[in-house]
Image 1: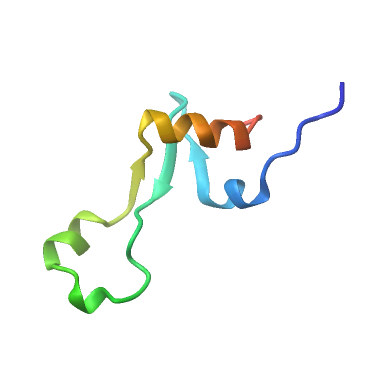
Image 2: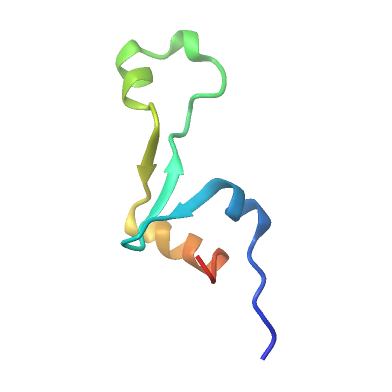
Length: 65
């Protein structure tokens, strides 16, 4: 059986934690930050864990993750 290919876009954007959850950078912080509230910017720092329905989709892109 041939090896499965990992989606190269997914391997750049997502990491799999030790417990199997999908870790991703917070969205909505690239541009137009002047109209965002300070609370939004503060809460969107760092990374977050994807929800279960979204994680199921990404797991197919990372077969060896």
